[in-house]
Image (cartoon, rainbow, N blue to C red; front, side, top):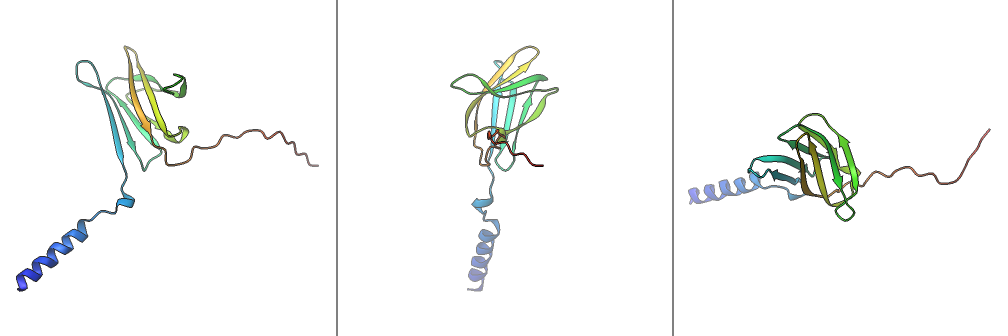
Length: 134
């Protein structure tokens, strides 16, 4: 009888000790784009707890663009040197975008989804009011 009670206690402690709090878990999405030969051409990692996407390429790239899929216009673009960079996702609204990466030899395109839980930073706009003081 003592062994049964001890076994139940140990199992109960194991469940409590290894239980995860779902409210504090973060999601990590990874987009992998492959070249025609099957090798990895580009990897995008999105950690929901961070404000940046991590963009990595097998080759050096000099520019990336994030395009609106309906208009094809760039909503965010930047120059780069090297094989990786961070993209500030707070500058993007939640939605689906096309990401285009430019290397010296080719262009890599991938579809990404942004789930931006943090609000987009508002831009300053003139209100038309002029306040003067002496």
